[in-house]
Length: 253
Image (cartoon, rainbow, N blue to C red):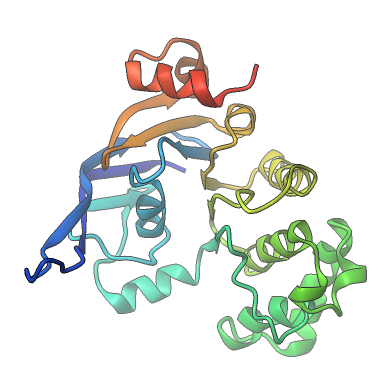
């Protein structure tokens, strides 16, 4: 995948207070980014810097206030109907799982295939069975989310994004709500999918994992990409002093 982002701007309403009318807060401030031909882009940086906002725009979940995004030379749609079509071609996973609590794991997997992608229930079940077995989740397919561990819920969420056969996956802090053992389960699943050639854009604070899976890394802070490029250059000789300080506090040797 090749990604080009040009002068991206995103604003959100600021909360009103002190008797004054709310204005707006600029979250992305003419952010630009260009990658080579890569499989995995990892977005890192301080909390509140704009990583998740950028990911949501790349995934077609939000429309920017200004700027352009293109994957493989194809611009992202700028209208809601076009974005709905685009969202059908990608998969997105969040830190909070977003599984329907009243449905079993199997039913959560079947729902988008049947109601969004038009498969029959039998066809949908046939598609999800092998991935469930591959990632050792078949024995949990009858359970509702409350009966699953955090790691199991997140792996089901990743499978739900995967079984729609997306062009690429967008993952927003998929391990931040998990304890170390459960984080390892999810990270190993992502690494396995990456090794087989899946395309990813990943937001994470797991710097050792970022180093392991990223082809390129973009450091997002204050609404801009202040440093980006190959994984080797990012970890080996970052020119940006903010990146050096960030790595000093987040990267475990």
